[in-house]
Amino acid sequence: MKTSTGSKIKKMSPQFLVTDIEHSIEFYTKQLGFEVEFRYEDFYAGIIKDNYSIHLKSGKPSIEERKSKRENTDLDIVFSIEGVEDLYEELMNKSVEIIQPLCARPYGKEFYIADPDGYILAFLEEV
Image 1 (spheres, rainbow, N blue to C red):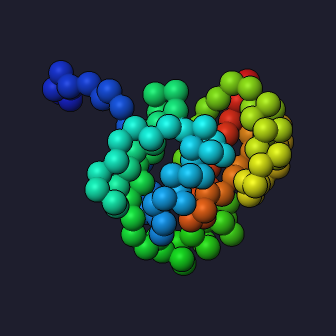
Image 2: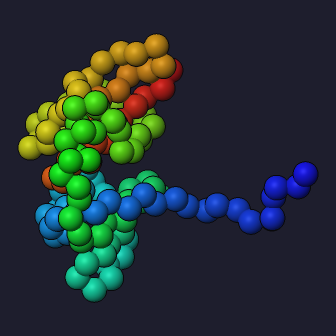
C-alpha cells in the first residue's frame, strides 16, 4: 500500500492562543531569542529561531487546560537543543518562570519553563 504522495513537510509550526500578542512576542524575542518572522494584522504572528517557529494567535487560552497541564507537567512543545546548561543559566538570570529545574534523565538533560500564557516549553539535550 502506497502512502506517500510525493509531498514533503518543510516546516511545522505549533499555534498558541495568547491573551496579549504583544506581550507574548516580547517574551519570545527578548527572553528566548526568537525573531518575528511575520505579522498579520494585530492578531497573528509567527516567531522563529534556528529555522523553527511558533505561531501566536490572539485569543483566550483555556484556563482549565493550562492549569491541568501545569499540574501534570504536560508539555506543549519540546525543543531538542545543544548547550542546555548554558541556556538554563541564561534563563535563570532573566524573569523566566522555571517549572522544572535542570535535571539529568536517562535520555539526556532537560528543564521546563512557562510562557506568559502558561504554555510549558521543555529544553532537552539528548545523550
